[in-house]
Length: 198
Image 1: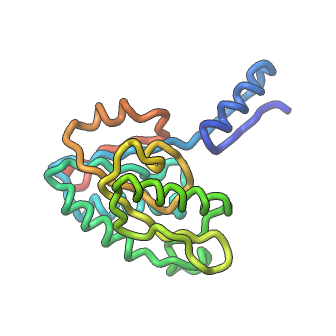
Image 2: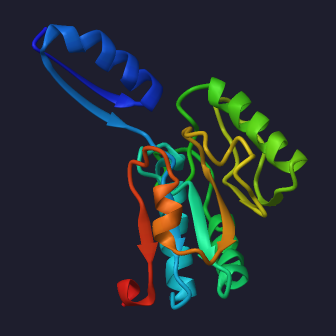
């Protein structure tokens, strides 16, 4: 073996790196994070909501750079969340080979149990479920596109990376640098000001 190339979780990537290190062969890792986005107070709310809904739900949330946490300046929080939820509720769920579908199934059955546990944990700790939050009936691994507000960092869904069709939003006015610096191993991080949307 001349090299190892892996895309997946940080935990698995760390194990691979530890095993491969002594062999001194090529190693390339593309690891998932818990990717944050900060929405500034001067944002074009409708454009940001559409863009970030796509960023959160594209590929049923199973991309390593999916938007998973959205921190929204408190001045535009309510308007943004309303627009974001409207976008998410408009996504069609169905066969991924059908061009009219946007949300398909998850790749692995264990994700359904994980998502249900995270939804239950968040609700028990005071999060407000705005959309989705449950598995669906068709054969396969289907879960509704899910949006939470009133979240905090004691909830399992905030720090835990996992492929999912879902995201959470919270009001924030501390600025993006403090938020991003408190994020362990994000694959990506974004800031959405008005200037970036024109």
